[in-house]
Image (tube, rainbow, N blue to C red; front, side, top):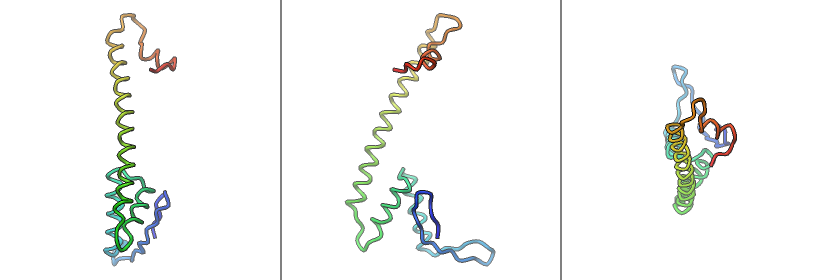
Length: 118
């Protein structure tokens, strides 16, 4: 059994192979691949656990998976807005440094020192 830091438990009971390597059955390998794919598109381990539960039944819960994906899109949109805002701030810093006429004074370093980021 493998437990991920978030508590995602994978009942993967490996078998010791002939060369000392752990060997997993096809279901365990499939589950590990599912976890890695879900992480690769941005889902956290807690969200992966939810997705695993949604996929475990006789009929998969597409509505629940869709809701989780929609929430992830909302989070990504906010992160994109935050990154664009940060980009504008850094562009302004570069421009201020390019225009700084006073030797020995850097507007960017002054703003960072004074804590008045706008």
